[in-house]
Image 1: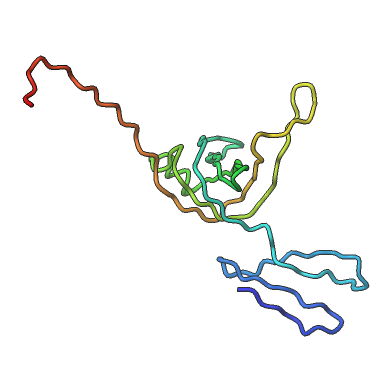
Image 2: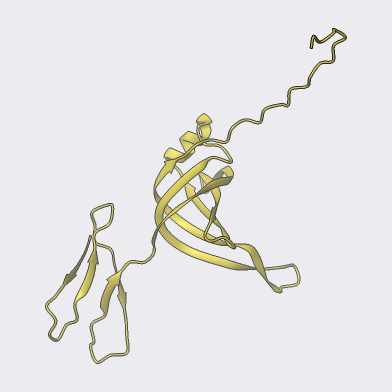
Length: 165
């Protein structure tokens, strides 16, 4: 739900957004105007991403155990993106129980933490990534379908019996 606050006058109205958690998320923007107070706009960092899990790894760092995950999503017909995130509660438990596997569909809802499109090679030269990388702070997730197990092809056994016509 989006509503406009303020009634004009000396202070410009601010847009307030009520998100899934019921809180108002706004972003302050400083512009080159005569007003000394920043204008508040909607927080554009919230996002929902759907894709397939490409990598899952249980990691221990500074005495804490968490799940490090990577997922691929299609942004357009020409562009796929890699989404990386960590989790130390429900997803970690699902991974340990075998309920979260590589290839499984997943929907993530959260905040954008960073974007990476380049890396530095061994010669300290900037190289573009094949797929841009989005770093997320995940607040909600929805597990989707798991990949189907591969079926072995059935081989026909030769027989010497006559086939009636």
